[in-house]
Length: 290
Image 1 (spheres, rainbow, N blue to C red):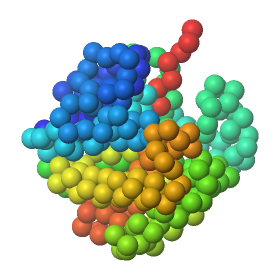
Image 2 (image 1 turned 180 degrees about the vertical axis):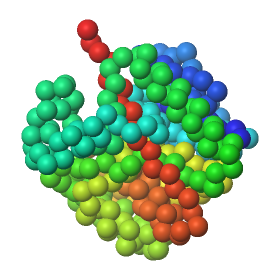
Image 3 (image 1 turned 180 degrees about the horizontal axis):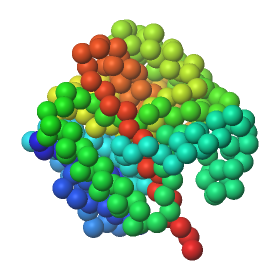
Image 4 (image 1 turned 30 degrees about the vertical axis):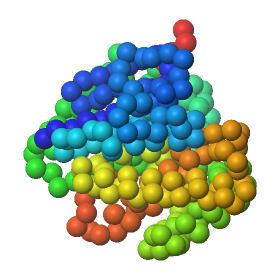
């Protein structure tokens, strides 16, 4: 079983690579330097749009240029996957009767910025390398054992005191969301209910981090990039923007829309019980500054 997971990098720092994980520099087309890894600026690409598409320029590159693999995935230079249960389960077990506010204070004391029961926070390279290596071995074992899992993704992220719609509105107002809603209603009406549900939710899949069987990955990319390309066109023709790359409010915006589209794609896929989805925990790597 051949698997490739591309790790999006945009700056120097910790780099992990093995037979499955492949670092890729995103936005290289407009970068002043080249990292010692492949770039998203070869073949058919949208590398020059990285400032609005974020890690999705790596996803696009993999879709158009990476052939011959059974599974393809994407993660970030400081966000990886894990099968292991997070350290936070210890707190859930030992302090389950203590209010959430007290647990958050305990975690802040331990230098964790946010409380997320599905995340493992790491500050040293040795530990994160070991966890990623363990994940590689576990993933290979599962796939070579004839698993029927077609899609691996992170568990949903809990937002605090706001919804997905609130987050997008804060970035660029309601106009762009209305444009997206119209596109999906016209092109993919079967996703309309899930779109509205996800926009109003305080939990969502994030980071555009997925590992999918090759055929499913291709369907996924057709779906999200067809919508985002149409969004680019309509947001300009509507007069909202002249050039998305020059608009401050659009910085990273299509990457965030990608998260929304990824979320509804995963949920739609999972509605059919015959489709196998595996939810993974998150490794958050925050190197120690000391």
